[in-house]
Length: 164
Image (cartoon, rainbow, N blue to C red):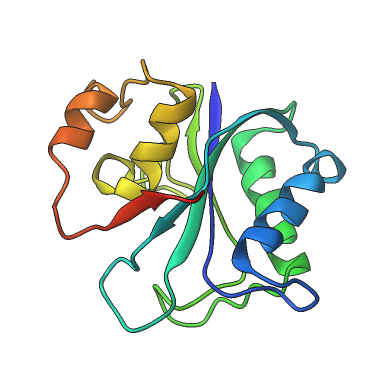
């Protein structure tokens, strides 16, 4: 299974909210060679690391694609760019953040611009809670940990709550 983490904490131009930005981006998946299979609930999450920037809206999508992991990541970056994503400093506010979290359990080390699974997937509430919505039996390709165990180990500093 292939999973994408999706987040936004500032609306792209022409959209009223981060959630509207995310929904519009998902609507364009097919144009980028990506087919949506399942989508988690949307969550409101505190910035990580903690900062004074706006809170994020996050979700996780299960997708299908005939693209390689590298092509898929390149298309996700193109989609981010279409929604005015600017890569400035790490952890800056962003209109759209699309992370390839897990590509069929493939492990790719630090040999390229792509690392799989996402290097911090086991530590992020804003990834693990939505991922558990759509794949409660997911196991980390990094260390074989069950998603339930990873959630139970999370720091209480991360604030996350379902939207609506």
